[in-house]
Image (tube, rainbow, N blue to C red; front, side):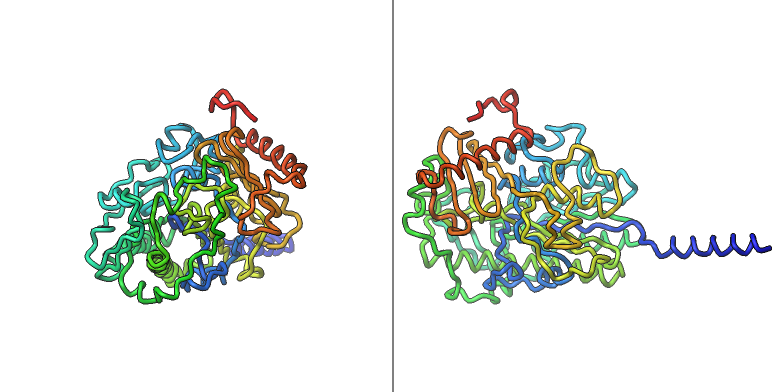
Length: 478
C-alpha cells in the first residue's frame, strides 16, 4: 500500500511538472524592407513608431545589429540560411538561394521539418518591388521553406492620391516617388499583408506555428495612406548633416556610386519631402505590425510566441551625400532588431550594444525552441544576450559585411575597416570613437598604419571563414 501511494505521488508530480512546461513556442517573424534604424525606439525621435516601441518594451533591442550584404536578395538569403553570402553563393539579387544550395535547410524549413505549420506572407526572399507587388508574384521564393504562402497584389505607385517625385535625376524603378494615397490601410500592400498574417494566426492558433510576414515599406515607392503623411510636418524634417567634402577621401570606385549630385538630384527642399514620405511609410508599416501583434494577444498566443522584428539592411538618406543601399557605411549595414521572448521577462525593455549579425537569428530561434539546427551555421545564438544584454560572455567582436565591386567591411566596437576590389581599388579606415559619422578616412595617416594592418588581417581571416575561395570567386587575395 505504501509503495502504491509513493507511485501515485510520483505520477502526480510528473504530471504537474509536465503540465507546467511550455508547449512548443510559436515564432512570429516580421521583416521590413529597406528600413534603417530611423525608429523612435532606436533614438530617432523624428520618426513615429509607437507599435514597434511597444514591442521593444516587451523585448530586447539589439542596437549594434548588422546585415551581411546591404541588398535585399543577398541579405535575405543569408538570414534565412544562417550562412554568409560567400558560402550560400547569393551575392546580389540574381538567382535563388535554393538554386545555389540545393540541399540547404532554411530557418523556416527547420521548423517545418519539426512539425510546425509554417507560413509566408509577402516578401521574405527577394522580390522585385514594386513590379512583383503589382503583379502579385514571388518568382524567387523557396517553396521548400513553407507549408503555405501568400503573395500580395497592390497598386503601389499607381494608387490614387498625390504623387511626387523627390529624386528628379533618377528615372529608374527605384526612384523616390512618394504617394499620399487615397483609401485606408487595407487597400495597400502592408495592410493586406497584415490581414493575411492575422488570418494565419486565427487558423493555426491551436498548433505550433512559424509565421514569416514581410512588410514592403519603406521600400520605394513610398506609398502610405494620407493620414500617415499628416503625422509629419515637412518643413520640420532634418536631413543628415554631412561635411561638404565628405567623399573626397574615399576610394574612386565608390565615390560617385549613388551619389546625390550625379544620380538623384535631391535638393534641400526636396530632401524634406523625401524624408516625410520615408517616415510616413514607416509609420504605416508600424501600424500594421501593431494590428498583427494585437490579434496575437487577443488570441492568447502572446505568452507562448517568440516575436522578432528586423529589416533586411540599412538605407542611406543623404548620409555621405548618397542614397539607398549597397554601401558599406554604418547607415547601410546596421539594422533595427527586436526580439521578444515572453518567458524571459526580466530584461524586457532593455537594449544590448554588443556586436551581432543577422545570421545569428537562425541559431537563436533553434536554441529558444529546443530544435536541432544544421551544424554548418555561421551565426551564434543570441540567447545569452536575451537573458543578460550586457553579458561579458558574448564573444563576437566584429560584424562582416560584403557588397558589390569586391567591397568587404568589418565593423568592430572601435573601428570600421573596408576595402574594395578585394583590396585592389582602395581602402577605408574609420575611428568610430572619435568619428562615429565615418567622415574621415584614416588610411593615409601613418599613425594608424598598425591598426589598419591588424584590422586587414582580421578581415582576411574572416573572409576565409565566411566561405570565400579563389577557386570559386576567381579573385586573388590581397
